[in-house]
Image 1 (tube, rainbow, N blue to C red):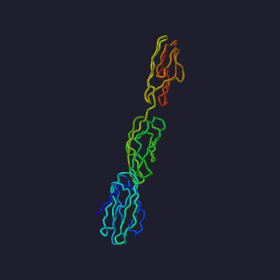
Image 2: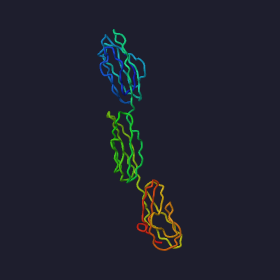
Image 3: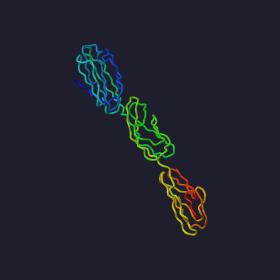
Image 4: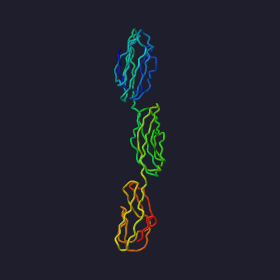
Length: 289
């Protein structure tokens, strides 16, 4: 028995059969993926002479796939099978010889092996609570078109994954959400990818109140905040501080007040992504000067 080694292939096509149609089944072997079992049977029942045998006629054969054959009339078929391992396009020739009829033209096989199906997106950008979010997952290999779905885990409330692979919506809660996305190709092959989406909370002013200041005495108090993306900046956006006091961008009110009375003003906290929160001082954080 003689063995011809082939490797991975996706689509196999024959060219040049002119001698009594020795191969009677389709010359298109269909398609497969690297790493998945493949099997195809050649039918030599159409041979018109006393026997047939085959030989390798040159070219590049893929690895991982083999074909078994022996001289007729011991058999009338040959099976090409195996697990292709390397994506690529391969061309090789199988020479058939009919005993009693002489040589016949070679069959040229073109083998194209596609990469296994996979999701190429390995991470997604963070979202912001209460803000519109959209990002897309990508896949490669397999046979397009692709269909995406949620395989397991939980997405943030307000966010969903559509069949085209787009994660979108407006998250209503903050935190880190872990999930597994699945892609299915047109040949029903599937692949999954573990991902996590972090939703950042909006910045929040956490200072409850400011202590009173005394006329003519040095004063220094700082606001505090949380959430959002660190890199805070503070400012007064309405009202006025008592004469002699000022608010730094770091959130500290300092100076020496030179007037008495009650002042009301609105302070704004802005994070590094320009998200902000405001608070009216004199209601929640009332101060007397």
